[in-house]
Amino acid sequence: MARSKEFEEAAVLEKAMKLFWEQGYEKTSLNDLVEHMGIHRRSLYDTFTDKHTLFLKALERFEDRISGRLTAGVKQSRSAGEALRFVFGFIIHGEEDAPAGCMLVNSAAELALRDAEVDAKAREAFASTERLLAEIVAWGQESGEFAQRYGTAELAEYLHNALTGLRVMTRTTVAKEKLERTAELTMRILEP
Image 1 (cartoon, rainbow, N blue to C red):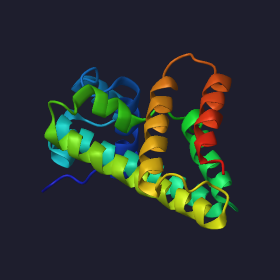
Image 2: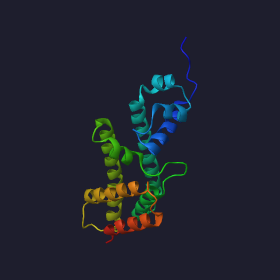
Image 3: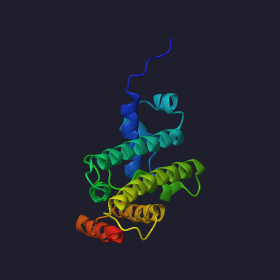
Image 4: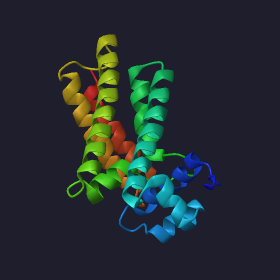
């Protein structure tokens, strides 16, 4: 008779995601995962196949989590400027009980050149962020809050590039005030 799982898959995936986010793929050993997730090695293989598959699922979980939170915050905003400030603030200040920085940016820097699946996931997540930024820019341009001297796609690419740099900087000891100044200066390109 097959044994039933003695753990909640979503809960252990969350633990794996945070460990990969904190340490990266290469530094995280199977022993680290088994210990941190609180499951047996056999259960890890039975449920997730292998470390790489687990990592890809953790990346998907991260993307779903972050895109959901960004989208919700943008929808609650009363103006495009408020929405964009929310996005920058979320990236700079992160979440409680979560590692600093961005698991997707970290993973792209670590693995994208040699792992086509990670590269594809990172590119799709980056494209999704640019679509969200383009929606914010279009909203601001239509309302007259943002200048129209550049197109929405160009501005979304520019803003995403700035956000990516901030995501890297949040992994360092750079003061949040410096990152906030950088975000404010970045947003000035949108002023009419």
